[in-house]
Image (spheres, rainbow, N blue to C red):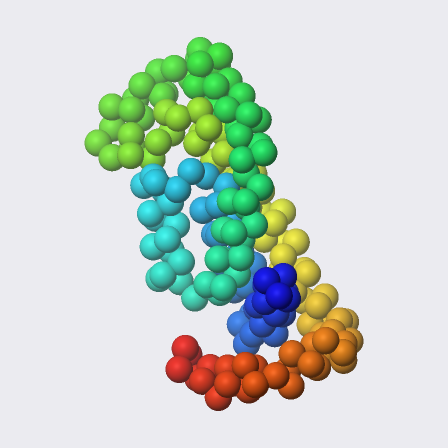
Length: 174
């Protein structure tokens, strides 16, 4: 039932009234939150952007959940990348020293090898993931939404009392 619930939430995100750009933007911000260790100044700023801008919060939570669940597998890669940038590239050492001595920048945790590596990978993934999610939403809405609505178990889910209860109360969250 857990996977059906998640699948239902994904379908709800895809069928929402928000634009594909808003859904993709929320997913990308959630990806950045999920791919980097949470407690840092940059993640605080990302949460602030989520609150202030009109992006899909459900997509952000989905992106956070997906990437935070699998990011631990890539931690050795992130550490190697961050270590290479912080230690092995000696010509960058004055730059890192300057950043570390700046007033607020040490709170970004850039001096942590895993954080720096994961932030770099996250920033490299922003544009491809944004365009991929945006294209996926457009393709789903134009090609697959009618087919998915006709699946037997989707019809069964829509016929349930829980779905009708949700439909009556969903205006409270808007």
